[in-house]
Every structure is written in structure tokens, then in C-alpha cells.
Image (cartoon, rainbow, N blue to C red; front, side, top):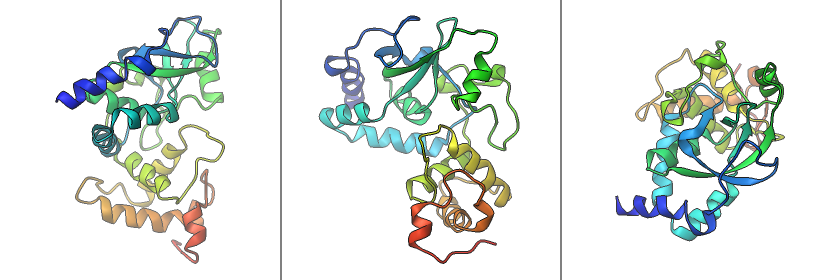
Length: 235
């Protein structure tokens, strides 16, 4: 517990001490915001990945944490009403929140002024993913309002691990690529349970599927690992 009290202090002091985010914070600027003020732009997270990230953070020194958090940019969009919308790093942010960290260092990537077209702009810029784990539509009102309310999407964990292993790439840093893979993997695998016990077998099957031609229309296909290990087939 003492280690996490120290972590919470480290992330809000010294090198982390930035000006508070405001409605008029310039695009491209860094600022500090209360994690409770960050609104998710996706329906869920891979909770197994969140828990793993939280544990990894616990093992890092102050210097390592500083380096990591500068590298892991947390981008936000400021809405016309001044709300802060988190457009990436939901897993990292929830992991920080789970460990009692209250403030986050974020980068403002856009300030949108058109209230009527806010969500169409968010989607056109790939800053929101209005679908659930199975690819069914979500309305903006159905999105969780707080990072701690994001439910578990087990197949999002599978897609994240698949990406980390090099079986598909995020390409030009378009957000939410993993969700397209998650819903596709779920359909291909019949939505079999993904949990701590079944994860190794599910991941092995996902790797096989990821390198087959059926995945050809998905973003980031084929990943480097598929090319290294050719031939593979999933058809």
C-alpha cells in the first residue's frame, strides 16, 4: 500500500506538476486533469490487460514511471461544453485509477466547437468507438461516464495481446483498431469464454486465425509475426 501512496504522489508532483486542463487549453499542449473528469470514448476494456498493467506499474521505480508516462501519451479531446474525452490509453488510465492515482498528465489533441456535430466529428477522426464488444452499435449516451465504470470486454484482451505479439499492427496510429479485431475474433471463435484459465488456448487459436486469409480485410493485417512464421493457414 505504501508503494502506491508513493506512486500517486509521484504522478502528481515534481516532473508531473503541470497547469490544470481548462476549456481553452491550446491544442498540442500538455496539462493535468483529474482522472474522474475523463470521459471514455469506448464501451469497455480488456480487464485482464488492465490488471496486468496495474501490476507492472507497481514494480516500477520512480524514474521508470516517469519515463513510461512520458512515452505513453494520454490524448484527450475538449468538447464544446469543456468536457474532457479520453481517446486512447483507456487501459492505462483505468490501471492508474485502480491503484488510487487521481491525476493524469494528458495531451490536448483537439478542441471541438460544433456542439451539434460533436459525435460525427469524433467518429470521422477515429476518436470514438461506438460499438460494443460484439460490434453492435452504441449511442454516446450508452458509453460509461467514468473510467472506473468500463466493463470487461474479454476479447479486447485477446486482441491486445495479439497486437503486442506482432500478429497485427496499429498502422498509422488510428485508435480503436483492436476493437475491430476483438469482435472478429469473437465471431470466429464462437464467443468462447476468455479468462485466466482459458487465455493460453484462446490466444494460440487467435494467433492461428490472425495469419489466415479470413483476416485479410482487418486493419493491420498481416502482422510482422505472421510474415516471419509463414506459411500459416486458418481457412
